[in-house]
Amino acid sequence: MIYIYVLPSTMHFRPFNNITTSYNFLSLKNMAETIVSVITGKFLSKVMSLTSNEVPLGWGVKNDVQELAGTLTTIKAVLLDAEEKQTQNEKLRVWLEKLKEVCYDIEDVLDETEVNDLCKQVMNGQSISRKVRHFFSSSNPIAFRFRLGHKIKEINKKLAKIAAEKDDFNLTEKIYSNNILGWERETHSFVRASDVIGRDKDKEKVMKILLCPSDGHENVSVISIVGIGGLGKTTLAKLVYNHEKVSEYFKLKMWICVSDEFSLKRLLIDIINSAIGQKYNHMSMDQLQTILRYIIRDKRYLLVLDDVWNENYELWCDLRNLLMECVSGSKIIVTTRSDRVASIMGSTYKLKGLSLDQCLSVFIKYAFKEGQDKQHPNLIEIGEEIVKKCRGVPLAVRVLGSLLYSSTFEQDWINVRDTEIWKLDQKDNSILHALKISYNHLSPPLKQCFVFCSIFPKDNTFYNINLIKVWMAHGLLKAHNENEDLETIGMQYVKELM
Image (tube, rainbow, N blue to C red):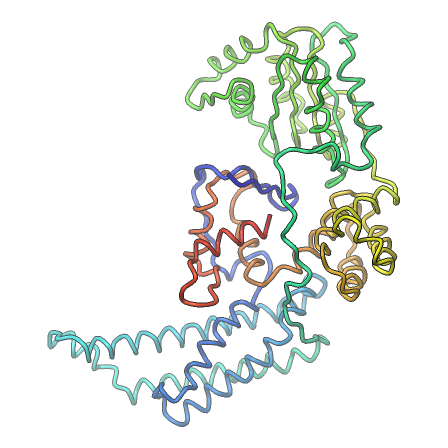
């Protein structure tokens, strides 16, 4: 079982189980960001094959195809740079969209050529009826080459104009390299206290609140951990949730990811499942509330409601009323980005960013193998400048540290420090900057697979093999030779995205 977690502001993957939502497939033309380098590379290799002597296109057509291949090659050299810069340049994004449309015109021509070749194979290799033979022969080779030549000339005109426009954007040639990406670091479904830096005081304060008896008339009290995205709210909740003293104090512990949809019935099902390991999907609300109240009535419990966005006080009251009949001292931890949500649900614990020294410690932990940092003081200096741009957000620091893991090439570090992404005006969103930088360093095929996942709703649940098959069906998995198994490649993509 594989777990992928992506920030709620983009998407949020849960454990891969059975698919529970109907697909709303989008074509590659409708993706959130224009990624044309993969498409261009794929079509270029096919166009190059048409220039070989084995393909009978006629002299004039073959010259046009060679011109097409040459123009595509020139454009392809700057596409990685263009794709990285498109978020800051609307004209560049439009330019990429126009190029993508021409690429699909090329695909139509390539498809027509393949169909024509298939027809010839059928004609030459099988005994077929006169009607079928007449159908195939109605498109004679001379007429086909004439139509093909006309279409390629039109494509060449469009492509030449696009090639000329690229000089307006000061694009540089880039070749994708894996030297900056290291996949040795394993991920875990739990948080080890030794992996968390700078949250000891926060952990002690939250635990003190949890372990104190209720001082009011109600059996349950709520503490809301609030802060911007990537600050470590969920990490802090996990540190507390897994602590030995907390486990001894609370007879029952439950963890629920709430996310966007604050549906009372779904929450009851998830809480019951977390408590006893059974999911009552087909029961009525009345049956569910009876089961929940029975489960908690003789227990002091701790319930974590992670990633809450609901600002409707009435909905919260409906859930809270079902959680009150329990042993006094029960607690609910809420993690949220919204101050309003925190004020609605209970007392607020405002989580702050880490200090520069703490962030640098996190960065070094993720960017270097143990002890390696002492060998590269020049990289530490650049790393400190990168960390300052993260504004105390530990997830941003970890993302960029992991991105640079095992790379001791100074230019890689300078590129991350000086990227223009930092100039984007996104208040309190350094995590989005960091994730965008990390995304830009993915290979084009991985970018396509990642962006494709945005068609699924937030918190969608599915098997990894189903996702891989969807990628396969849309031609997103790239094999380097005929012997490579696409499902194996797909599993490698999933692991690399993790």
